[in-house]
Image 1: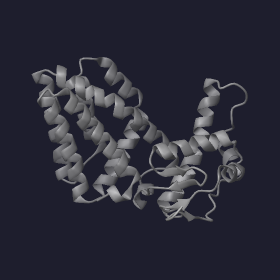
Image 2: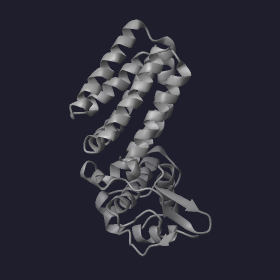
Image 3: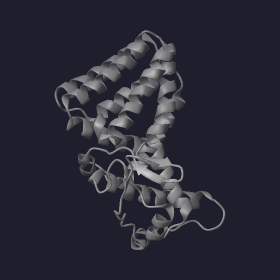
Image 4: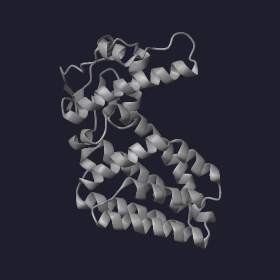
Length: 265
């Protein structure tokens, strides 16, 4: 296929890394413990490939090794490889071409690796996938149900985040407080409970995203503020559909800014 490049870059996925991590593939039926271990192993593989993309050892248009080659290099079964590649495709980092293989389609900003370990990115992105659905509906319900007092709390959280951004001190705590103020206004405590159950991955994603924004262009920070403002104004107008779309757009843009350096500006 025109424009596609084959690459001879080795992924350096060594069996020793599996042994060192004390993680093995599950045996037999797909029990809960076995599934969790397999997910951790696929996350390691995801992280290895992700690191190669971030570092520039694999660039946009480069072809990844075949499933068989990755499986042999890492000493894992092809289902584990497929799971890692599936997540990389879902996150927009690679695309699959039938009969040709998988190709790099997006490249994160190189400074990302100074803020987070590559192995954590897979869980952060899965969490963001859940947030798009969950917080989209939360914003819709907040718009339809919020009280004047709850609107004041949302406004105050938005203002604190905006002030931290203007001062060059944008932080994850203020971002999290803004999002929680919206779930609190849904009139349904389960929205906040579910969000809090993802706290580790959620906080990790927010810290990474905010770090990239704080060290990026002024325009990048402005985009984040504009997205927050669009959410707030939709909730103020009690427009549930507009609030849901604004929140889902914001969370998807955050994901795009993380995995695609072309969105960094």
